[in-house]
Image (cartoon, rainbow, N blue to C red; front, side, top):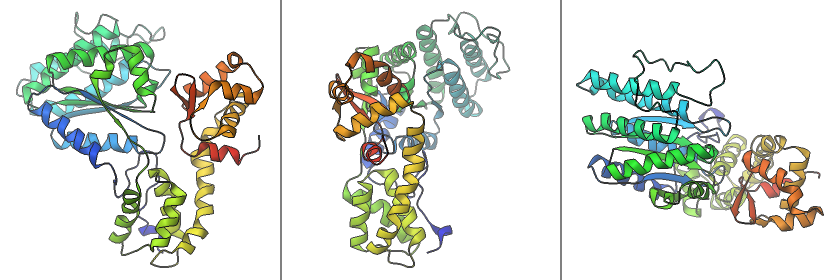
Length: 393
């Protein structure tokens, strides 16, 4: 088999050749776009799921859909150690630049850019000596709008003004936030308040976030009305039909087939997780001698695929953990793959639950585990428990 023609793409956020099993989410977002375009009230959207289920891919696809409708778009990736003020300013700057050439009143664009610049520069948390950071906007910063230093006030005013520019053109603006669970707590509150104001005023600006399964609880803890503020979409592993389609369709375009037994073995190995489907499919293609790809090809290629996952997908995350954090995760894995009680982890380690709080909290901040519900924790990465059980304690 020619590796140059290999169609499979096991990359971080890299769109697979066949985006299988996500028709419902794509249709939901199409409805959001259409309703906003018609001036109908619509909620912003949040996509949640484990690592490797395709949240970033879906976010990027949503962005492409918005761009096809000539919307202004911008995207950021949240970081736990960074305020969203400057990244949001940069994203909205990009969105307005996409809209500006079609706007008939250049002074309206300049007016907004002045507000945007004032917003970007008014960062009370900025390190000393960096307060005069400039976002590269060639207009003077406005005064008295989005520059109070209170992010909740400033972000609301900025969103309302950006939505006004989009209204002039009869389109919308979409701000995409990846790793949304890492937005700092005060910033989450500000983001929810700004979205709440937009939902009441009907401004054509939406926020589309993607994050780990506990993101809804992060939003709810910030603002109680967040449960009604966003349209939530939980994505998980692919069912058998979708997983098979993700393998068959790209192969058929290259004149290659799979036997039914090979598809059975691949589904058992990948367990329907999109990243794993691409990873196993790529190695199976490279090592198969000819079409059709058979179950024997899968048996030969699976160990190599597992080794690549162990190094790149699992190992890179495991290496980020401290010895105490690794002990905690090994204790979780020894109990099972489902969400486990923190009390059971403490019992397995022979420790008091309170003494393990630093390790647990650090693992949550690193995105390796999440709190499934009160008193329960789970891995953010599918099959991570299985990987840990194969590692020396």
